[in-house]
Image (tube, rainbow, N blue to C red; front, top):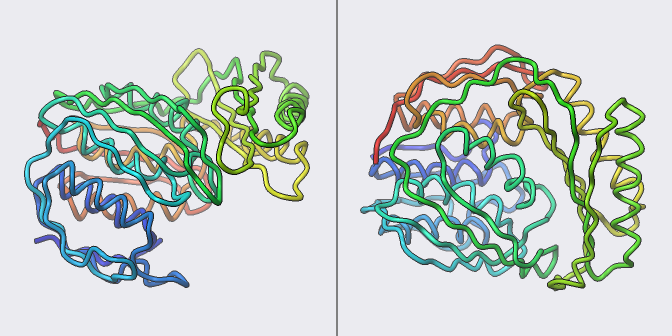
Length: 352
C-alpha cells in the first residue's frame, strides 16, 4: 500500500483527488492521511467526497473513511470499467476539478466512458470547464487523449446546477508532449457570457478585454458573446470571460476572469486580458493551470515530455512530488517558484 501525506507541499484537495486517480490507474491501494490539514476546514468536504466516489465507481474500488470531515481514507481499486455514469457533486463544487481526476482514469477503462456531471462549471478557485475544453484538453489531444466535452448548462456559485457531458475513449498508450520553443501567437480567441444578468454585461467584459489585447499589438481578436438565458439559464446569476491563443506553433495558454458582485464588467474583462498578456510575455508554451494538469498524463506517457510554464506554482510542485511517489516517472524542473519554468518528465509508458 502506498502512503501519501495529504499535508505535503500545497496540501489541498487536488492532492487527494490525484492520489486516488493514480491508485485506480495503477491498480495500487493508497492510504491518504492528514487530508487538507492546513485548511481552516480540514478533512473531506462535499466536493472531495464526490471526486473520490466518482473514481471509486469507475474503478470498482472499496474505500474506508469516506465521510465529511474525514482526515484519512484507504482506497483499494479494482478493474476500471467504462460505461455510462452520472455524478452530481450536490453543491457548486467544481466540475472542472472533478474531470481532472476522472478523465485519466476513464482513459484507462476497458471501454468508452460517457459521463453526465452536475455541479459548478464556473466557480472561484477552480479552472472553468470552458477553459478545460478550450485549452487543457487540447493539450491532452496532442498526447493521444480522445474525448469530447459539451457544456449543457453553466453553473455558478452558490447553487451550481451546471450540466456537463463528456465522452472519453480508452487510450492505447499516451504520447509525450514536447513544446519547449517560444510560441508564435497570431490570434486570441475567447468567450464572454452571462446569465440572469443584464445582457450588456457579457459585451462589456468582451469589449474591455479586446481593447487591451489590441493595444498590446494583437490585431486578430475574436471574443464571442453569449446570453445564457437564451439557451439554458443558470440557477444562480453569474458571468465569465475566457481567453485562449492560437498560433503557428503549439501553445496552450489561456486566462479567465469570473464576475463578482460589485465588480464592474470592464474590470472582469481587463483582468482576463492582463493575465493572458503577462503569461504570453514569458514566452512559455503552457499556462500555469495546464502545466499542473499535464503532470499525471506525462508521468504515464511513453517517452520524454518537455514543456514550459508561465509560472511554477506550489500546485505544480505538489503534482510532481505525487507523480514521483506514485510512479517511476523521472521529473526535473528548471526554474524557481513564482517564475517561468521548464518541466521535463520521463514517463513510464503505462499501457491499459
